[in-house]
Image (tube, rainbow, N blue to C red; front, side, top):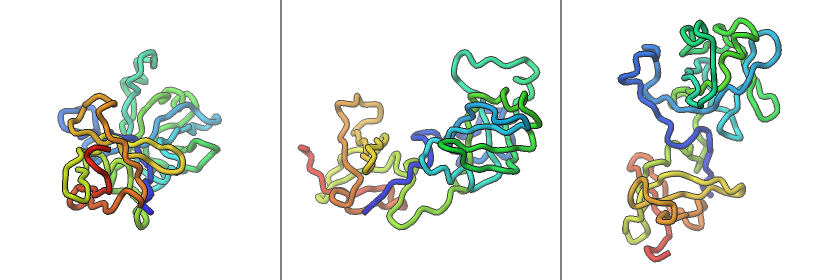
Length: 210
């Protein structure tokens, strides 16, 4: 039965072109996988809220890339804003309840850790752990064309919903279409015949009039 590994937020691939504030080695396949929510302890540890129940993408690499929060009201001293680290070199990381706590070379103390509140955490997609048989990362399914057994196009995957027992594909004929125009197709073997990442296509047992 197909299972979706939700290891990253939907539609978060952000290329570095035209962004001079990013490091030269910013990965072209950067994916947003979490955000820094607070400092942890007194020695510079940071607390990261992952976007997945299984945060393995954060443990798969020691290089975490950062962007400042885009939320209004996240204020930082001018010196902190000027010296905001675009790259963290992680020396330790571990799960702590529903968050991940980590220590980085660039964060020497609690004050520096607190200054990173709200920062968006990215890692390269190529560093993700290999998905198991019939497992797929959400980010890899976004944009795939969906057709039924008769070869009739149903649209493209614009997002997914996590219902607990399984995930649901949000399929729209036109990107940006209103939600009521979307098809919701359970991502389970009863409806999904095949997923081809190479051909960027999902084949489902689903009628045009469903």
